Length: 511
Image (cartoon, rainbow, N blue to C red; front, side, top):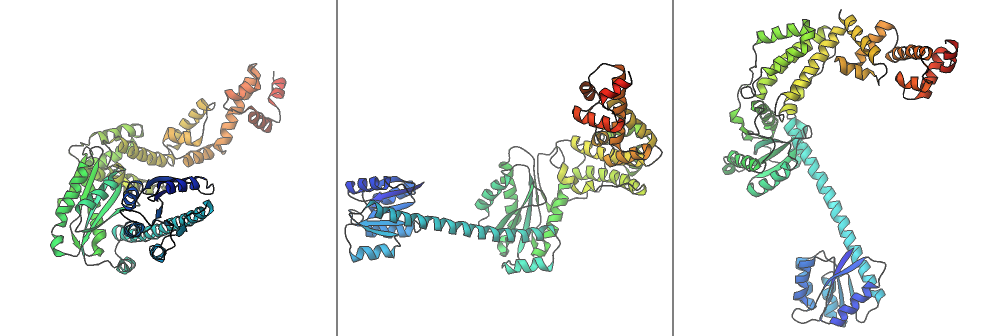
């Protein structure tokens, strides 16, 4: 609904106009207030922010001429409808000069004021559409600019990036500093915008979300002024501390690059900041690390000899795999070992497992590529242990399937199917039960029985159905449920297809 105000020194005129507008049904509009002169009118506009201003020209204290001047200065986009008892040239020309949408002479009809209101509303809607269009264009241009900067950060420098930045008038030789903020706080980026807006008045900056990591964003600082370049690190530290104060709960990791000359070095800043995340401890809540604090994180929680011995035991002591991996993670000290040391240790084990898998024509996965971003917010090793152990067990069991132990594994799978045929049984259930890919389970059953899993399960259920039909008085519907078919009609169809008899016919022939 649109809102209007009336500014006129005659009370009866104001009340009459309000009454006329109330009679208009084609427009949803309401009166937001009345004023007797221009001074009151300006105060009313400030308080109510109406969509449309209706004003007389001849008033005391501040007349319409001066009032129009003030509105044009302060509220140039608000449509004005002028009402007057005089068709004076000065009044009309002033109204035209100040872009009033209409000039209505008293007395006027409801139709006349309706026509002027419609013009005012059309102007409002046109202005809204223009603003929306400008916002879309601005957003699109900003998005393009952000995409180019993200490319400069995440990818090696190239001619295309250089040309794109140069075309946007970036000083490619200016000084840059990158702050990488890692937080699960959904309000963090909003807080960063407020903090930067307050404390980086003299340094250019832009805040960029990392499209490859939803819990990371960047604050990119830039200046060509030498006097400010020396202050960039200090300002970055202040921003980090303000963010820490604004994040009373949840983990927060902030990494600050050295200042560098030239946009071509941004990717190096990003990579150095990514290396800094290896220096956090899982029991940290907040860490703020500058690039100068970077240290060698090549160590492991165990010696190489220990890792080789562990892998030998994992290969050949398959019954103890879970216990061995529990001991492996249990020996890591969260107060002593950084995430980098833990990552190196896990990577050493994964490399050994993957090399062994390749030798045995078993597919692998690059699970270490997301290790640091996946586990940096974890309070302990529980999730890491579950996922890394699950992967190791999955790969080793996949290899064992292709070896002499496939017979043993098949026997265990077959026994499980025989004991659970009456449940909702799928290849995915078997895969989860035995830490084996569902495709591998399917292939093993096909290889050993020369039939698919579904055919094998149907055979078992059919034999059990025959037994129950011969030995009990259970209804066919009850038997359907007993052997794992929730839909009796489907059971009847399968039974008929496999025996050429209905369940009732089969019972009559074999009792």
